Image (cartoon, rainbow, N blue to C red; front, side, top):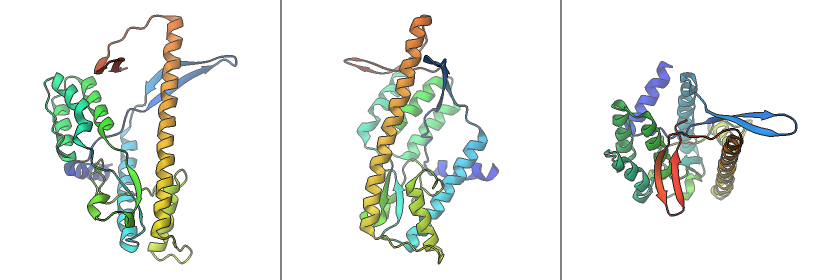
Length: 261
C-alpha cells in the first residue's frame, strides 16, 4: 500500500484527477411474481481497491512505453483529450454560486483547486457535486493507433496525467487488452507470439472498440436510470419521500439535482 500511495501522490502532483464516479449497489427483491428495487446503496471504497487500481495504472503505463518503443507506428494506446473551456461552464457556475473559485486552465490547476477545497471542506456533499461535474466536463478517453497521430503530445492522458497509457491488465474482459498482450509478447521477443498487424489494421480495430465501448457506457447509464426509476416508483406506493438535494442546473424543462443519499 505504501508503494501505491507514492505512485498516486506522484500522479496527483503532475495533475491527475479523481474522475471515478460513485458506484452503487442495487438491492433487488424477487418474489417470483414481482421484482422491486428495495434500496440503492453507494459502494464503500476500500484502500486495498485503490492500491490495486494504482498498481494496474502503473503497469498499463509501463507496457504502453514498451510497446511504443518497439512498434512506434502501430501500438494500441489510450489517450484522454483535453476538455475545451466551454465544457466547464456548469462546474464553474455551481462553484461560483457557493462563492468558490476553481481554476480549470489545466488538469493540474483543476486538481489543486478541488484538493484545496477538500482540505477546508465543511460541505462534503458539495465536494461530491464538484467532482461529479468535473467528470461531466471530460471528453471520452479513446483507443488509438500511434501511427494515426502526428505528435506524441496527442498521446497524453489528461485524467491520469500520463504521457503514455494503454489497457493491459484486463484481457479477460477487454479485447484491447488482448491485442496489447500480443504486442507486448512480440515486443519482449517471445518466439511463441508474433504481432504482425499494421497501422491501418490497428486503427480500424481502435475505431470499432471505441464505438462498442461508448455503446456499453450508454447501456450502463440506461440500466442505472431504469433501476432508479423502479426504486422511486416503489416508494410512491409505500410512502411519500422527502429528501434534501443540491440543484446543479436549472433548465427550461426541469432541474438537474444531486441526491447525497
